[in-house]
Amino acid sequence: MSKPLLPVVLISGFLGAGKTTFLRHLLRGAKKRGLKAGVVINEWGEVGVDGAVLKASGARLIGELSGGCACCSSQDEMIWTMLEWGQKPRDERPDFVALELSGLADPLVALDGLTVAALLPMVRVATMVSLIEAALVPELKSRSDKTSALWTRQIALADQVIVSKSDLFLRGESVDLGKAGLERTLREVNRSGAIVFAHNGAIDLTPVWNRLESEAALEGVNAGEAAHEQTQTLVLPLSKPLVRERLAQAFASMPADVWRAKGFVRLEGEEGLFLVQYVGIGKKQFVLEAFEARYLNAPLRPELVFIGPYLEKDALWQALTGEKSLL
Image (cartoon, rainbow, N blue to C red):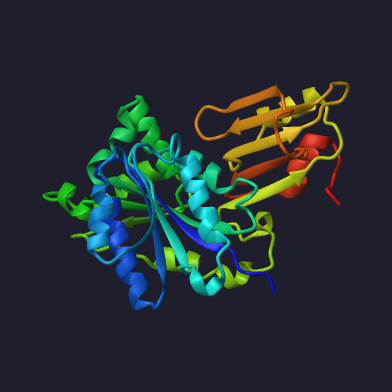
């Protein structure tokens, strides 16, 4: 029987949203459940304050990515850390890894790093948690700058959204009505994730434990065929050349549940490999460009990797190739 994939809890949220507080709750809960948790901290700046706080709490810190964020200068370091722990024997590795992103990190790009080809056989993103201060939720509608765009991305990708400091923000008004208003705003960004209101620092971790405990059901199942409540990764091998116009049309009409796609393809009537990059969150971005592979040590395989919550393999295959089924 193959070794089960190492589950990752990906934690995002803007500066001061309470990510480290959440992580400390998670670690205490794991200890009570008899689970070994590994922690990877991604902080902005050279001084690892959060890492020091967690170490003082007895956390098992297996990686500190300082001086940047997991979506840029520290992404390679994150990948190497996960490779190191993902390939260890089961009795030497943690039961799960909690990866706390910096407040300025884009979780989609961090997710991109966790789904490189080398990691796919070793790790899986079990759950994506995003925290946002209650006072900032109304600003999702009123602001249109880069900061609010980052908040929106962090919330949109999460399967659990935690609204922190809600007891402070809702003080003096009807709590139930206030929560309902915040939830309506969040639902405009994330239609299906669990929304949890932290009250006096208490957080319901049930959705996280449910995701982690689903590991047994996923053993032996291709990540792209996992249950829909999981973040899925689907790899489509593409040995035949594709038609350029069909490829462009496929990505122009890509469903919203495809967050990210990347890989290499061959095109009919054209020489060499072409790099495909696609982002489906927010304004769609599709890039198709010739790729020079002469400096690589090993040949690249034509294939595309798709990331999202609901991936329909046959529908994607038909859109790309015109054929009804991969089989």
